[in-house]
Amino acid sequence: MTVAEIAKQIGGVVFGSTADADRPVTGGYVSDLLSDVIANAQEGDLWVTLQKHVNIVAVAHLNSLAGIVIVNGRQPEPDVSVRAAEERVPIVSTPLPAFDVVGILYGLGVHGRGMLC
Amino acid sequence: MFRLDTHVHTCLSPCGELDMHPPGIVKAALRAGVDAVAVCDHNSAENVAAVHRAGRKAGLAVLAGMEVTTEEEVHIVALLPDVESALTLQSRVYRVLPGRNHDALFGLQVIANEDEEVLGFTDRLLLGATTWSVETAVAAIHELGGLAIAAHVDRERFGIIGQLGMIPPGLGLDAIEVSVRMVLPVARAQCAPSAGFPVLVASDAHDPKDVGRGVTFMFLEQPDFSEVQQALTGRNGRTVLGGGRPMEDLSLHVLDIAQNAVEAGATMIEIDLTEDPGGDRLVIEVRDNGRGMDAATAAVAADPFFTTRTTRTVGMGLSLLAEAARAAGGMLSLESEPGQGTRVKATFRYGHIDRAPLGDIETTLMVLLAGNPRVDVLFRHAVSGREFSLCSMDVRAALQGENLASPQGLALLREAIRSGESQLAG
Image 1 (spheres, helix red, strand yellow):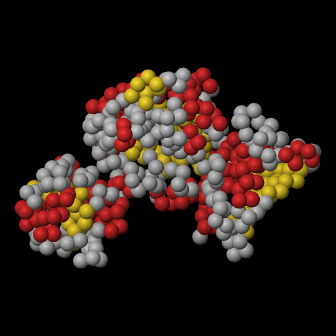
Image 2 (cartoon, helix red, strand yellow):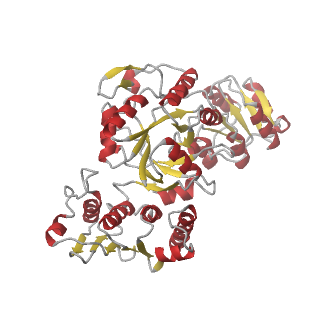
Image 3 (spheres, one colour):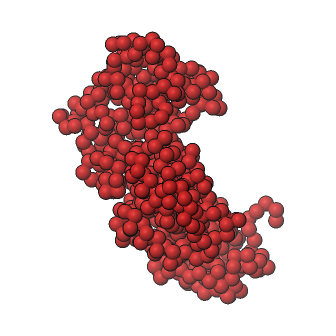
């Protein structure tokens, strides 16, 4: 499952590096504390958040994440999109809240990396 | 030399205690020996003018401020030139602050005057977030001539590093603030790596007993906004010397005792710190050549209600150090004779669970020497056999006639302390 395919399933629009939206998603992580994401998100994860500050691009790049989903209809500012394109990070903006996004992701076979599953 | 607590709340903040009314804050600040406080309620400045007036009556400098919540849920402390600009910021913040407060859930938001009277309540959701990004908030503060300080950067929630992973490069902050949860040397290493921001310590008090629990020492002519602004930008000799927790950090007890020595006319002060974790022992010794005291005075000198000072209700240094030593399985001894100076020695069990942290020794030396550039200070710090010693006469000699309290002097002093202390840590 790629970032672009997931974007379609959650009614999202791709910003930033659209060219990299064909990247495979191998897991998922949800958090709005960027320090927590740096510490815990894994390479290949799709990161679901409501943060849209430019630092999300740096965090995604740092952790080699597959991409970012921004929830609740929030959209990245133009300068954030430009930065994301430069750093090759696809950003999906969806009108859905985080809970529904994660529910859909599980249905699509994208899971977290917790110990229970 | 001034002690400032640059971040206190009032009863307006829903999480603030009701006795954080304007005169209550002023009284608590004076009691804690603070020279100035900045009133920084969440997203509001309704009580700034009243605290300012209460402060003027009682002789406490009060700076106008606000703690702005950005859309990323980062707290930015704004210090503003005057009450008017704080109210202008408030009107701009109110335009971007959605929601209504729910008293039962979040608490009352009390607008009070300087006579402890309740004037009313605000029903805006002060605990909510504005729709401003951190960049927009900093720009809005700067547009009004204010200073933008990242609040409690050591806290995961609402601290800029926790919320945003790092301080966004290029964000024009004027300083970063560390809470009372962390000692300054750790904060400098973890939260301000090479960014070069001045680091402040503030209480973030919501309760009168916490006002002044964290303070920043600044080298100023007087504790007002313009001077603080110059200190944060390092202009005209004004500077931030350090900070800490006066009731908790042993380093600040040492500072108090050294300042007692200066008041006793000492021209030479020796400070010895010996940390011996292997032998489970910490020893602090301060010797001076001041006028000393007779046996009767020496016997009561460590009593908290004994003081020769008129500025505070309690004489802090000795009694606090004695209490800290006893709590950690040690003791305080004091030897003094009229005309012979004074020797204070405190011992602690190093690994005792109640042993207070040493704190920031850099602050102790900077404040002591900036305030008393002609006093000779001999400092020795030993940790498990490694040793760092610093002699203020050597620093003065290297300055070739330049005053130790000049910008060059203080920079050289700071560099000498940092390099010596860092070798001890390594």
